[in-house]
Image 1: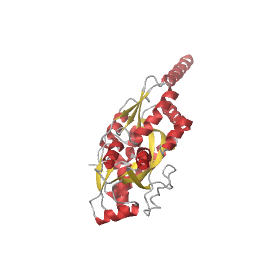
Image 2: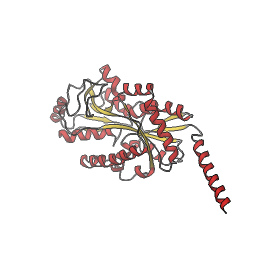
Image 3: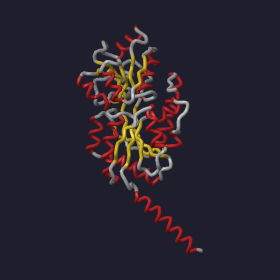
Length: 319
């Protein structure tokens, strides 16, 4: 009997060891819930080659835009929990829990937090032809013509959408929301003059601001961003209570084995320490993070509470 128990233990140990060594056994999918060209997509394509290098398998970025990232979220939540299908998303993955009455997944139950790759503030940008040069000018224009101005976002419930809803609340203005399927289409609409203003990620708008096609009025960070040092924070521009930091985090299906989650998290963190990747991230206006799964889990819970209150106060809804 004792010999049987020892043999059983050795078999289980050998199986676990083989399991750990087997990952990854094929290419990985890194799913993005937005169209190509936006902040999440940019971060995914910075991260993917480093993960491929460290994990020894190809990492394919797949864009699955639509339904406020819920198409991508559900796809990953229902994927085999073996670490080969991952999600990279922003706070939209928790915002949607209070924005939609019925969802086919629960963020805290159906996902395993892996690591936050980077973070950056949103920036309030306007079409260069809009006759405003400051946040004060924009607020005055919005108050003069309620409902005449409109803003784009990467979709209902994104931090871009709710940042604008917060601006409306704080300034007592009425600006119409025009949702798009991702940051890139949202910015295309803004540049083309289909909409007047938008909150967007620094990685997505930096080149357009520097070329003069968009005008940046304020950032949602607690301090000025080194990539846009001339742009004031919301507080400096006269609007309190609009500090919004956008994080870009990697998640896996909830039942993914702990050792695999830790392996991927270590690879994400290693990517944020890579000098070339780090330089490119900073040039894009994204701060490298590389958190532990535990730290990311704590952030998810805090963000869910925070954004549920914003959704409630603003009256935002996707239904």
